[in-house]
Length: 472
Image 1 (cartoon, rainbow, N blue to C red):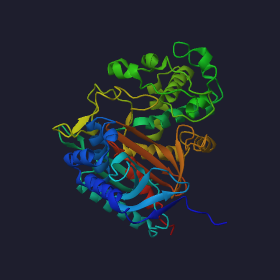
Image 2 (spheres, rainbow, N blue to C red):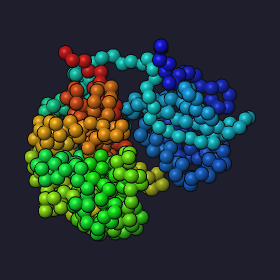
Image 3 (cartoon, rainbow, N blue to C red):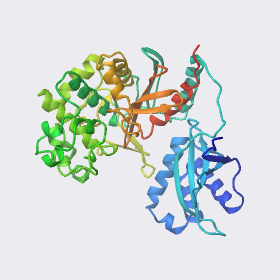
């Protein structure tokens, strides 16, 4: 029985008003002009959609998409089996990275066909489009050319390292670590990790399990007292639930955090008011739900088991053995050298950018917010692969999808065109970082950026190029 593809691409715009609206929106994206988008909203969109969010939010979303993509080119209208009633999905290719995107239009009634809904998300590549195989040298040359183009457009702000095992094949940098003082980024600039600290916390936990000081099946009530959460909750949650995001707990980035002073949160104990009210959203172990609180509490477990400060323990057991000399949870009210400030585009501001200093944590912790360099992330990957930190069997446990959600024990786990890929990404206002370890081919990609969405789409595109490398 022949498999029917789940979608079909028609490489022509619809006729009439619907086609005109699609064409007009693509031209609006490609103009990068807020006034042009205002005109599109006022003249070509339905009132309900126009007023669904403030005008500034509409403009910000489209301009962010315009900046991230560098403009887009129409490829097709995509229809799905089963159908998606009421939605017209337009497939476009972005000009910066060559990634595929779906723009979903919902149109009002005839004859006007005003736009009543809009959404942008990444899309699968069209069927049957294949790019030629490459030698490793050709792939690296193609990536070098891609980076030269991005740097010419001032799109990339960050650092990139590509290696095969210990051999570094390419490094690149672009943009500024400080826009206020025009300090350029360097290969050893420290960028924010976002959620990537979860890998370090998980690896430290796994080491304690291997040393017999902890079991994945221990209830966390053994280590976490009632000043954090009631025993009725901690009795039902195990260490394994925390490390695999199956505890049902949520995120401590809540109202108490938003309304509190950043200065209040430095040591792990300072976070108790943020964690106190948390309750599992489902019986622990039932399903995957990404949880900052869960991974944070793993840090509390580490402190209780070792009798050491979490930060000291991670320095001693992860950073030092791996040789990571430029990685830590730095306090942002100190003048840490060579540290990049995070920035988000702000079209309403005369400066065009807004820094993230008043949004971000003052000091990172077990669930994220520390700093590292692409060189140190490469060292971390090598330390994992060479069993410097954990055994091969423990690594395989951690790098196996636990609940069918592309996540293992503190690491993302996925299948890509280049085979199995593990690692983690991190994102927040003004930051985006990614570590991809390609288990089959041995490639390691570390991308770090001090602007929104500046690393993960790039790492994704690089993965697509490396997937075309054929062994000699």
